Amino acid sequence: MNLLTLNDVVVGYAKGKPLLPPVSLTFSSGEVVGVLGPNGAGKSTLLKTVLGLLPPLSGQLSLPLKRRPRLGYVPQGARPDFAYPLSVLQVTLMGRAAQLGLVKRPSAADAAIALSQLEGVGLAHVAQAPFRSLSGGQQQRVLVARALTAEPELLVLDEPTSEMDPAAEHALLSLVSQRVAARGIAVVFVTHEISAAAAFADRVVLLDSRQKYVEAGPATSLVCSEVMSRLYGRPVEVRREADRTLVWLSGTVPSEGGAR
Amino acid sequence: MSFWDARFLWGEPMAASVLAAALLGYLGFFVVLRRMAFMSASLSQVSGLGVAVAFWVGSLMNVEPHAPTPWLLSPGTFAFAFAGLGAMAMAVTPRSRRVSPESLVALLYLGASAGVMVVLASPRIAQEAHEVGDLLFGNAVVVRREDLVELAIAAAVTLGLHALFFKEFLFASFDADTANVFGVPVKRMELLLYFSLALCIAVATRAIGALPVFAFLVLPAGAALLFSERLHVVLTLSVAIAVVCAALGYYLSWTLSLPTGPVMVSLTVVTWAFAALKRFFDKRK
Image (cartoon, rainbow over all chains, first blue to last red; front, side, top):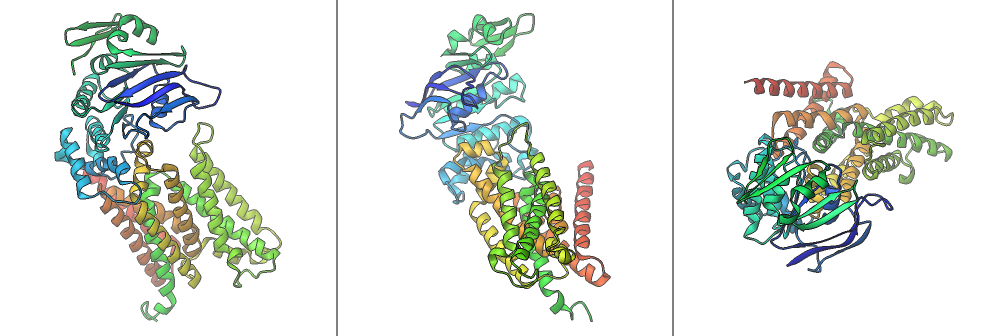
């Protein structure tokens, strides 16, 4: 099912200063889309436009459901303020904000939904612990649980693993992938790990604002040495093996993207 | 005359101090976590400018500084209007690299401080300037009945707003982008939060003074955050610390003949220092 379509959408912050050429994309249920590009490529700007946080400079966002799809969102690692004295459950319950609307408080049923999502990410046992007492990886899992508590149709992850090592990133994306597969949720994730995009995305969107370059297509055909080298402006080697993809800069050690 | 026998003298000032402290202790939770400590000092100064301008406007219309004035010309109305405008300017000014929130806070603080001095130097109100000082920045020893009533109204409005929108204020403060995505009207919530702050700061500054207001907005919540990591405990402790410091401060200043505001502030400083020390030693265990 088609959830959201971008028709020749131009993204950017100031009129007359588009960051990227017009983008046309469709987000459909059950599909995982990876967004790749170097730093400053316009990835987060594109996501903000998809999320409705930034209006497009031109073009159209069409809503085939005649309403915005229910959104789940996992922000960049350092975005939430970790000084707040909130428990893991209180953070997860924030995911019910859209369902509750203004004024209404979460009920026992909302708490049960939040707890079941925490259980899904393996953190139900720390539901009452202070959020800030968890490790970085655990906090990101809580934010994934919060996003899923919103019962999203479209789940957006903006470099959720920017402060994690590649192994932790793969563990988190595996978890997301398991949690969303059965429910047919559409997923968009921004990553710097080419191997993660190769392993988890059905389609990829490649961006670079400096080259004024946008390309979208199947991950199997676009995540290759030639296209990645062009995108990052340096020689990148990509080798697909049976159930994994190896990626490395020429002259360095490969990083591995395993199967989902 | 014992302290208790003199309660007809200190009853209202004590009630005003405790009410203002409770209100500010609660709001301090947001002030400290949103890192707006100096914004509160700035708003206090801006509301002071409002009071000075009210006297100046009153003098143009031949209104006596201490005589009852129509509400439109009253210093309270001006104080709230100025603080409200200041809060709105801070809420709606987009963050950019060129105009940081800190620069805006400093601009308002300096502009208001200089403005107060310039307005009070006006020959129209020069004679009352020293008395205006008390009215500008309060004096917890003598609190007028109107100040207490204004405080009670501000408390009712603020508590009503926060009872309705606490969930939204919390989410918008903790993670604004995600709150926006999940349908929370973050900008409107920030305006409401700033409005409640401006209201309380404007009213409390006139009742108990700028220094205690700044202290009650920052230190009790800061100490509570050092004592606990539980939301409800932090909120309760913050209010309790502020109330105890206000009441005990008032009592000590009365019995030891010390200035009231500074004694209250000193107690909040001591409490914060105790909380910091306790946390330091707890962490070393």
